[in-house]
Image (cartoon, rainbow over all chains, first blue to last red; front, top):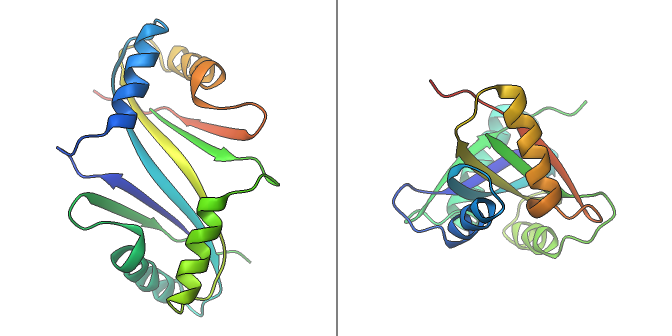
Length: 79
Length: 79
């Protein structure tokens, strides 16, 4: 399962701004860079729906800050 | 365009290990957590192939460390 946590629009992203500046200095025509974080988790579960609900809960309890973060959950089955 | 930079297998990922430990303490049956970084870039270019080649170059010059990082590039066209 993958969980991508990114900043909500309007929040400052100093790492993205620095990356954009450095890439421009290297000569690339970059407009904007945003940096987000991906958590790749393996866990055992009985159903895909159960995993998605658990992932949502993990985001709310630990991985994402509801004030400033958006998150996206992608569940993949391993066989 | 998105560039995902992740650690090569075998490299220690303290942030992933800490996240796994905290999720276990919260009661989730997580086996392993890996943390990677996604750069979302907007740039103007004449062709998708040109963008992919430029992205590859950006990874080699700035975004990824060839000793410890893998990277994956996804190019999307905005119209």
